[in-house]
Image (cartoon, rainbow, N blue to C red; front, top):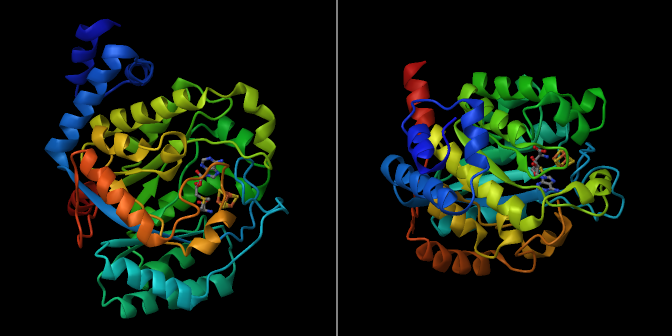
Length: 366
Ligand code: SAM
Ligand code: SF4
């Protein structure tokens, strides 16, 4: 392969990237990295413009029956104070989102596969739409569920679903999860297919800078997203948590700043590969760099998820240490974000749903 600026131009002019091309792009440094970011910013501007869509994030429960080896709220972490917002608290947060013209809401929780949970979510979805006059698009992020559950929630007004593949390499996936039926790579894949079949706008993502992860794995992740026709992506740096089994491998990690830069490169390459999908600037970016999300917006992301969970619960949804904004309330978060997005030369698309353009095209074709 030809390297240097000429090599870069050559890659950018291709209609599709090979795995080798992507590995090369993810390894760029210095002026070549700047050129990659300029190209992804150009493509973003051309295909999705400079609007940033808000999704008000409600982390409504940290109760989880799974034991992912990286996650601070895993079942076996007994130091976590478990909480579950009341329906009233969730409805208040939804009204806050609608009143402040956030076009969408994300309801996120630990994973519970139980009929009571399915029923509760079904009723809540209907109640949220009623309370907000149908103003909001609702995204769910509640893990792997049965096909029937996905259908019931979709019929009750959930339009989008986020389920990260975490890693598209089954061998790496195994190293990040307990080796049992409850944490199977195949089941995760089947769940993603199930969501797509049900008609959701499907979002996925990965953590970046995990122990044992290579640039080749990350290139495979981007190709997976493309081959799967994913509509939305949220990916962020992996951040360690002392009370998790993966913490044992912390000496294998890249320095945090390098994980941050690698995440920006992943976002940039993804924007070039999938020009009109929605890409989120995730909170984990902000944990490393105070202006992390805005930097991601500048080079390719177009979605931000301001946290609107009532402040008193924030400290208990600690997936990783140093999570930002845990001591702020929803109003504080909104004000600080407005100023920062303006700094990134983007505008907030208040009151717009901001559906994935890629999804609209995909549905027209099918
Ligand atoms: N329980 C649902 C699930 O797993 O899909 C949704 C909530 S889960 C906390 C959301 C995401 O948090 C996961 O998909 C994972 O990628 C991310 N996450 C968990 N632990 C993390 C860590 N230590 N560093 C960065 N991201 C993490
Ligand atoms: Fe539970 Fe999701 Fe954390 Fe896994 S990543 S332990 S499913 S909350």
